[in-house]
Image 1 (cartoon, one colour):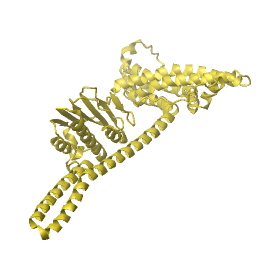
Image 2: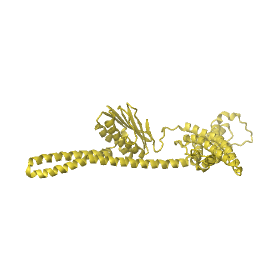
Image 3: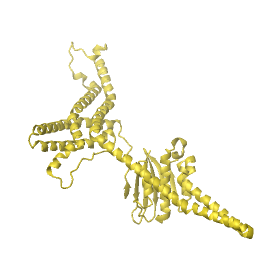
Length: 434
């Protein structure tokens, strides 16, 4: 299987946990954060204090380096926990690595030159403040919610003296058991209904600190890399399309127009000496003109087919499949052709280009007898799949027919996957972001 990586990682699933499931995830994250923060604070503060205290000796530097590596390990644990809260792909920064044959002192100083190592250290020390606040708020909300909702089950066991004044007395509801139960149950229900939002806010508060310090720089660098890759892919796809268009015009319409000019010149000379031959030459010229127009129409369909603009992707793909040299089974979501559900023009053009180029490769190289094309929405992406029962061996390497498809898909931030073992069958799948 050959996979062309997406410019931006696509989510593995668009399904999210329900309210109760997310509440348990957020609560577990907040509760576990406090012991992790305490351990992190103790280890890192001790290491930094010991390293700084021994800087006057040679031992201080190795201790600081070891502390930075410890901070990196603790940060990696936190990075494993962040995706469940932030609902974002897992990202790990690229740390500086020592060159081959680097000496001991160079390896000791290397983490100190890495800015991300100091960000990991700062997170490991200062996360304790946020963790304590989030833990206290979360635990308080859980306790009040459960105590209030279950108050009716244990009110009888609480001793009340004649001088005790409860919230129900302050509200003027009296001192009866029913009033106490009503007030405490109402408070419990209020905390219970707000519990998912409060716990979610606490989890996001902690996770946002982690994202800012542990993955923020890496995300920025990855995004810059993604944009550079998309730019290169777009330039490559455009250059490939222009070269192919130039070649097609040179090999097709241009040759016919040259032939047409020669025929018209010969016909003008034959008008005086041999009118009948001139008539036959003009008939050939008319044929050349029609063939040149047909080739120009075919080229224009490859650049921007009018049916795609006017009637949408399903109609354009149906026309494409109708011109196929082998039987093609087409399955396209009906809503893609509705004016209200149509895709962005860039996505439509890319999907059409993927199918058109894939079918061209099937006709030229696969020796297939049948082909299936499927285009469907899947959450926040459009999936385009072209299958054939041919001989396989398709490759996206430069110089192969699928390289242009790979560049075009990468340019819009999508992912192209080609499964084509020797002997077949072949599956070309493009996931395009919506």
